[in-house]
Image (tube, rainbow, N blue to C red; front, side):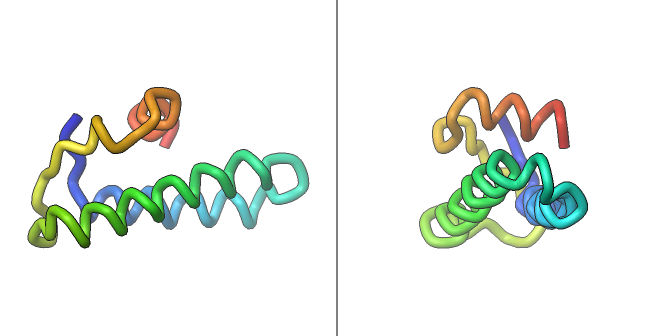
Length: 74
């Protein structure tokens, strides 16, 4: 799975906005996804150091359920 780092950052912001908008019934699940995306971004920045906008294969860094959610729900 190739993910644009800039796009992943935008998705993280979308997750944060969703958590704030739906905190009453989605807080736990959205917070978990937010933490996973944050961790993924940190790994990409520390280990891969891709240039802004560069694609990077992150499939091995994501839990399969989270990868599906990132690809299909965000």
